[in-house]
Amino acid sequence: MVLAGVLAWWLFHEPPEHESPQVLMGLPQRSASVATAADSAADEPDGGESTTVSNGVSGLAASLPAAFVAQQAQTSAPPTEFKPNPSLIVPPTPSHAWPARPVQTILEAQIALARQALSSGSIDGLNGPKTRRALRAFQAAQGLPVTGALDAATRARLLLIEPPYTRHIVTAEDLDRLLPVPPTWIGKSGMQRLDYETLVELVAEQSQSSPDLIRQLNQNLDWGQVAEGTSLVVPNVRTPPVRDQAARIRISLGERTLEVFDAGDQLVALFPCSIARAVEDRLVGRLHVASIVPNPDYLFDPARFRQTPEVRQIKERLTIPPGPNNPVGVMWLGLDRPGYGIHGTPTPELVGQAESLGCFRLTNWDAQLLARLAWVGMPVDVVP
Image (cartoon, rainbow, N blue to C red; front, top):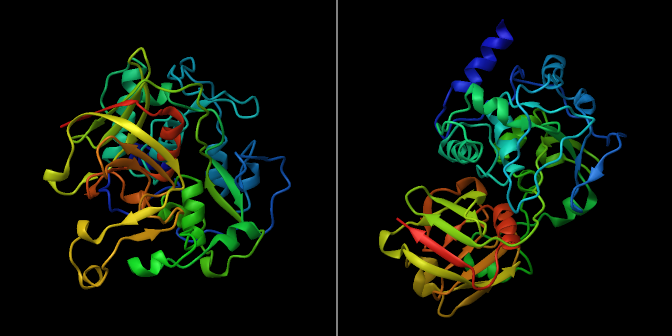
């Protein structure tokens, strides 16, 4: 009865966006330390990254409470047939080792939606506006009542076809990538690359999650003392493969979303999107993709920025090197309006706010997926 009550609270409670994520149903305040040796399970690398995908939940038993692991292992047959959203995105394939079951929490819903290119931004377990928009898109594609709520009908159709969690084994390459990010523009311009600053930042981005969620999943871990071979629990989410290029992009300033459609005007992907802070900098109308540049440099023009003491002393443009902490992240889709584009960000957890100088910001992983769907000349309609 207690477990059922916690589940009911989790499914329907809507905390504010700034609230700390209550991510693991039944997880105690202080969990056991995460094991520091790699599991011997037959895991398969995901796209060359160090995140691995487990075939079950048994490998997590050392770091998660037994009651939680048992709850996650429930694999009752779904009440309805699995119906992925047909699109240019390759739908996920159910695994024989993990019988599909309906999602049970907001966190599981975010993971399942991300696997179908319906993004809620950084996965955090919170039932905020970005998650509700992704749920509405899923409900519309499935012919369900469009409520934005994780109701019974939606849970029955939105299935987990792989375990919700996996392990990230910290590698020497992970640790070698960590670099301090200078706080000034002049300091940034003097770096060779702007890579991840901390391990929690690296792991969070590679698992499409918020840093707070990664810390919550790995309690009792001293992030300043993590060694090679440390095993971390992370959400099991992978960017879906792409069959072909899409037809058009639609950006809604009011909803702060970027939608991708195929030639039949069917929704292919949905991403939360940051827009210009100043209303006068917000583009409206028909644009086109003019360039697609992975790992771009960033040209800092002091004339475009608020004249702080630092900016006033910069007399010429600066070239900021590439990397996930570059101001435009790891992907740039230039638009046919000088200085404007769709791009990534060094702060993915802030995506969805009004914070840019006029461009459209996505999480780095969403920007990379969009680049695989886009093409030079692709129409981009920006609506109020």
